[in-house]
View 1 (tube, rainbow, N blue to C red):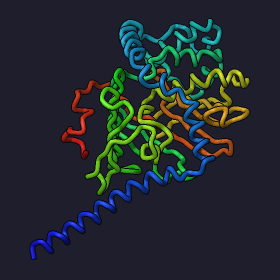
View 2: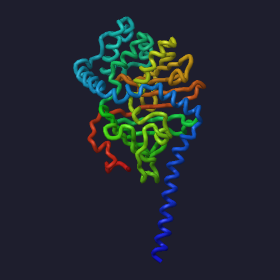
View 3: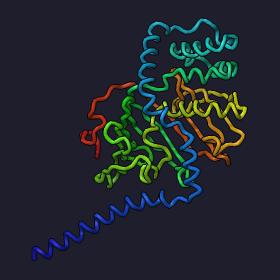
View 4: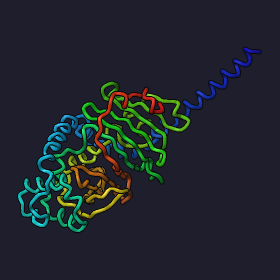
Length: 340
């Protein structure tokens, strides 16, 4: 009698295991089954992005830059003396220094919308790229929340992912959690380039949060919801992508933004620059991009990307960005605060 009961329990466990494995396989196959043309387009888009410059290589430079800016801000936090209406008469290097000082002092954030638009329209076309290149484009260690959407398999999501991200550079380590008020709520992932540089650890949330596993950074599971790698999270990535595309923009004759306006997007007030390229994809990451500049730091807070047909395929908004120092437990799957 006991052996018969045990056999029935074993059969039930096998069925549950097969069902769970089938769910994971279906998720992977959904991406593998993507048409070749879509795979090629996604690969071309990803290949155009400067992954190395926006990730591991950024660490030492960011650490040095943030230290220098922090030190400088204590002595140069006063607003620049040149009026905003006369900045266009300054040499390029002085325009860049003026921008840095105006941002750190809070002057940019306090300017009116019309004054900001007039300022950025008057600047040398190289002033904004140089300002961003000087950085820092983020922090060596910080926590932020973000809203993100991507068009995957031709479908634009009805609801944005709302994510909490903890991140350090040099080495690159990431913890990300999908918050309850957004899509894919409950998902969690961890990445630590010092232990498994080509893999991330995570679960899908919901019932399946009891199943956590390692997955390739470039495998079908990792890209089932995004074209990007976990290594691309952070404010540095968008800014470095813009700088990498800058030469192609110049070669195509695009030296100034097609439009400049001030927007408040999900609580973030930014100067929004619209760039549209003649040829679009695949020569460029997008046919049109709208990038929102932070008013206190040299990085973009928002980004919207549009394909050749005018359809939006990516939207990112960085909300709260707070420099923080983390201990090793922050990036450990054994952290009791996590659901791995």
